[in-house]
Amino acid sequence: METAYKALQISPHVYWVGAIDWNLRSFHGYRTARGSTYNAYLITGAQNVLIDTVKAPFFGEMRSRIESVLGENPKIDVVISNHAEMDHSGALPQTCEWLHPRRVLATKQGITALKAQLHWEQTVDLAGSEPLRLDGITLRFVPTPMLHWPDSMLSYFEEDRVLFSNDAFGMHLASVERFDDELPPELLKEEAGRYYANILWLQSGLIQKLLATWPTLNIEPALVAPDHGPIWRSQFSQILQYYSQWSDKKPQNKVVIAYDSMWGSTEKLAHAIADGARNAPSHPTVQLMSLAKNDRSDVIAALLDAGALVVGSPTLNNQMYPTVAAFLTYLQGLKPKGLVGAAFGSYGWSGEGAKQVEAQLNAIRIPSCAPLLNLRYVPTASGLCEAAQWGATIAEALNAGL
Image 1 (tube, rainbow, N blue to C red):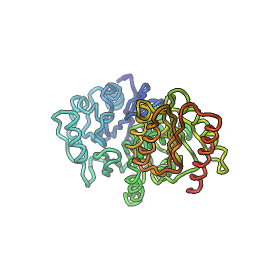
Image 2: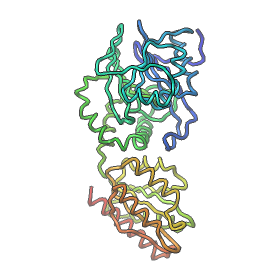
Image 3: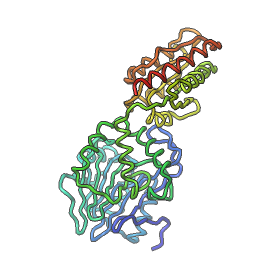
Image 4: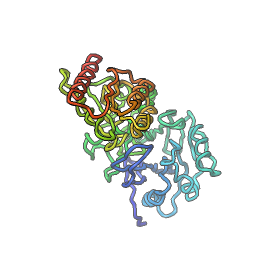
């Protein structure tokens, strides 16, 4: 049967049957500049198993890929839902209506989430501690609650040694290449880091626990197949190492300065602070990021290998600037570790903006490494020198804590 979309065989019994979303530009509130994939996987044998589905609008693409393997009237015996979020389960009702699988399996929390989200009458059984044994197919399930939803789990196909890792070890990256060794390593690190920082950072403690217990799981995958981005067949040890580093983040000699400016005064201070920090004896890496020009998720990604976050805001209507407030709210939800911070700003009347930034950094538990810098109106030459010295103070405080 000729189909528009073709499946890709990734192991003797497993095919990738997902979809590519070239135009996705926002996910979970962060910028996905390179799009994404919604990866679903078909295990073939005497009985056929589908691992996850795709976002609802991409059902037709997934269906076409399945038909390219199994023909016009395919038979799927079991559907596994590793994670109930809609980019993986959105097409599940259409899939069940089309294929009439004998069983749909999920964790206990997954069953609850699927019923609550999809409002459909399909029976969903529990994926328990015992392996699912079909004719020639053995699947083991490893619950990973809060990585990154309460229902999340891993599924391991023993015969082909394929680990279906759901959102773990994934990234938002649309490409025709399906495997890690078909893409530049620096691109993989960048996008995996961006994904970790914006989705998984707040779960770093749980990730450390998972990595600590990894040797006891008796999982030795030849392939690790996440639900977003490429399949790991050559560099899984590398992504494990990155996850170990990111989840146990230590301060590094890098300063990120995030700011916005109303009439340019806060921006002048930001540039002077950056110059002062860079020219300090410890010579940290400095990344200056205007929140008017950079998405907040890009700033979050920059913080993954930083040691200090410096945030600047003017005062507008007795408040910090809206873009700065939005950034700090987003940051607070991620509970970042391994950072020190400082606040600065300019003002014309009462100067609450920078003070509120300092208070918010303290609420996020980013300890201060320099006193508040809050200058009135347009900074003079001496004010810029003060800002540069303040930047050097931050750099030295950071270096002392490394």
